[in-house]
Length: 462
Image (cartoon, rainbow, N blue to C red; front, side, top):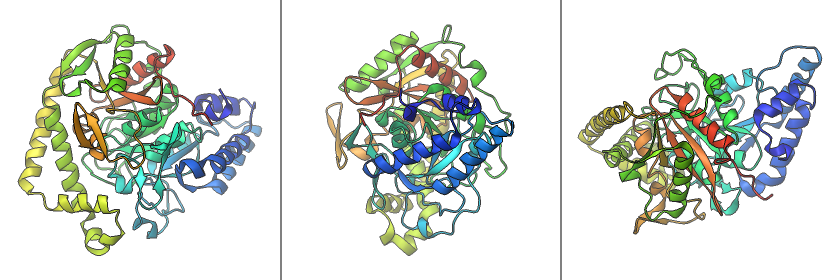
């Protein structure tokens, strides 16, 4: 493994031990970004001056014998809806880049920084996070590092692409309906959508408040768990953040999966006619000893509810911008927001009832099951510009169909780890779904799959 693809925990160990300087690591990462990102288009802002200053400070602290954090000197980057001090928070839009620069970093950026990680910049994303493809109309499409003609997925497109390309070992993204899991699947990296309310969203730009989650993507399961642990804890700036103590996953990461009751989602989640998704699910299910055919009743209803809730809440939030700056939106995003503004209130109320019903149904399933295995996307990365997708013999619009399997789970805020499976061609992901607040279960399963060689993040051929 080249240094560009070294795990974050290994980079930090080497820096703490004096085997390599933080400045050397950051300089190499910046050079790789400068060379390759013009082709990938993962970054919208590179904070090189800040990063090098922090790297030199870390090296001086080590020379003085001061303790360094668990992510000492590790480069990371954040989707550009996270506040980054000194930069306007774009949220993938044209309008937001006219905002005043942020005065402070987002809380999760601060927490990784407090652990020693070094921010390299802001990452490309779908406009206002309303996107599954990563084809940004203002900053250009983010390209898949495994095949530059293909999508990186969205809306955390730059987060998936930057980790897959070896620019950073860890990136921050957001997930409302699948925006961590879709790019994780298409780019072939690990991703975590934690339980709704687990990680604070303070100083990040919202999309749909009752569905928005923030979380990490990484090339390594240990790095994913480590970053998650370091970002835990309530924050008063996010009223939806649960007032729960830190419940670290790292102490349980090596516990193994013996005794776990694992089932494969069937019915709505069946992968008939989707050969890549079917093979990936079968590979993971076999490794975990999962029982087949768990019918999750109501998943289609939950997906419909997620569509309505997202559409209604996000359009209400963006209504002033739609009235004043409609021409400055991506037309596809604008039209979805405008449609949401016309939804009857009764539909939104009914969607919330369906959401509660599906939550209760899933809790009954988890009385007998610890972990559910499900596909993440219907296919590997489509071509940039592709508009339709064949699913079970039907020709469907591509953009919403990439969230076919992620939206029902987002609707009720369950924790999910996306694990990458490398087939004969492009990677594709599988969801590991656990009960609320049990991120430790899906993270230890992801680690076990990586240790078995079943799931891994592949390096692009450049």
